[in-house]
Length: 251
Image (tube, rainbow, N blue to C red):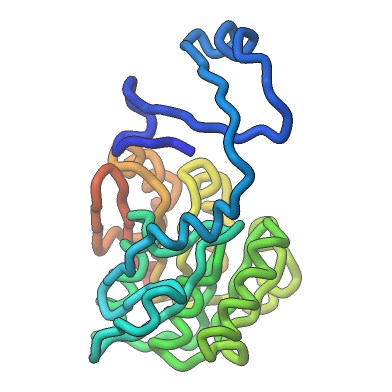
């Protein structure tokens, strides 16, 4: 886990958990930096992390854990997500950016065919399902993430609207069969965004909207260069992170 606002800066701190005690001297030689090895007590770290996570307000959404269920304000779309083994509790800037973008898009458009690519906990897919009351396809390469997505969709009353699938890219039969999509949200890292660019562009319907996130400010131009058939129509930033909104030309 990278701690600090600039994850790739010289002041970044990396924390790693090991089941067995690692060789600190060996890690120091390999990393070229001082590595400190300390034992951790046997605790329920997921429960402890939940206690410290405040609710998140992103656009129309109010993302919270069970411990904050009693403080949901009026006029919001509540989504309950517990900290766990999949990415996406709303606390990372990229997830909050995507939710804010969805809120803005919902003011002027409705989408019938939506794909959340790299869904993590399913938070973004659940948000889209609640906004447009339409079925959303959610995919992730990690089977654990898909299990978590299904659980969260049921928990938030969106079990019938969120269809999830374990898939690497968009060539999976379910994803290919669901194309073209008029909205694709891909909150993944810059590397996968560039690697999957052709597949994503091909799966996007003419006139469709694409939301890309999981990238840093200094990666925007590089990522955009892989999506040259599309037009940049919006950009959001929070800290060092960015979300880009692109549109595919109509035929």
